[in-house]
Image (cartoon, rainbow, N blue to C red; front, side):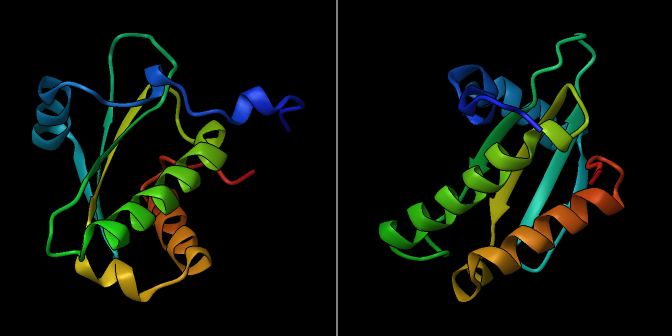
Length: 124
């Protein structure tokens, strides 16, 4: 377990920023489907161990408050579990409207089970 709280931070380098990065993951990544999100995962070949996250949502999910709450939940799931993900991954969550009808613990279980079944998550 990480002893300092810095290990669980979510810094600038751990986010996908450019449309080039998003497009590369969406085009070449493995697509995983859950009830609440579609997940695209791509293992980078740059020998950098940082795991990066991108989020995509639309207005179909709900009003801004609802969308932002859902995004905060997914960021928190990523932040607290990134050390168990395969190093060098780019992950994109595309939110579905069904995400509004679930709680945090159900969403977390759903996402982590999906990543574990695809062998991108090692629940030690």
